[in-house]
Length: 457
Image (tube, rainbow, N blue to C red; front, side, top):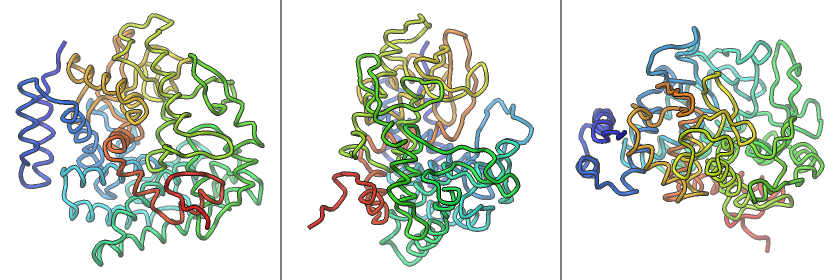
């Protein structure tokens, strides 16, 4: 099978042309090269970023300008979900729009207008001690994620703040209008009551609080998982910070986080903490906190975060190459497991819970860690298949083993792709987020070391 890339490219390019008013020479050149099958790795990366960016541009919820939780091109949705806004996915989407500016998909002015609309919506939307809920309706009211999850979601809020602070850094030294946006973002950031989510002073952060159910969900967050950015932002807050002891006793579980293991010949570096003692987590753990947080050279008393994420991605790669269950299609050019859609609904895929489903975001968003392996998967996906890519890039998941493919997308899976690919290409989002002085203060407070941090004296 072979995907006719030129038709896919031109369909997406026409959308961007409608935003920009004209096609650029770069886009014309890419289209010509694709049609002649002479496209380079750089051109494939351009196309991938363009398509996935468009999920958050063309596919955005129109009232807020923020990200829809999901987009199903087959137009089959749960009854209430078509226009539900995702808070975490919107944080990823804000960063994807910054990529869009830098890659010439949209203008700076267009992005500024979108950011102003999004910030205006977030200023008026439901919040709970400064934290947004997991989902919002287009009128800014909470849409419960589950019966008791109708209040603040601190993890989703952390992902959103990561994106907002990145936008703030991008516009911080701009014109008066851009600086005003940066100031409005600063106010949103300062209003998050991270310390409230210690449940009255416990030495741990809790994921949820509801005005109706209080702390009934009872989810203290310990690592290691996708939530590192939440603890760093909580420590960094200029208004409602937590102290280092919350990080050490809550996130690091009194040091138990260092109880690593060896899996597929590689050290996990930290304990991938799950109640069922999984040796390694789904690959989104290596992405969500690191869209802005640069793991390259980042260490603390517990681990080396570049080694952590590189080994995590390589364990998934080695698992799919070894393919112990003999699933169809697995190999050097088809790999990567994470939480995504599946024939059984949304499910968490990882080497010890592998049901034969590949999620493209897993390998593609790991591009900084496994560039050769991820690029090989990208080329395979775009040149040897004809049913796995649509308007907004690779579909969320597929299974050759089960002959299962759906033209559906999730914001939390599409969002990391253009952002992490850009970090691989230029380190853009890493440079922006890590330049934030308050983030640097939080990292210093928790004992991190990073090339971005100023040394005392």
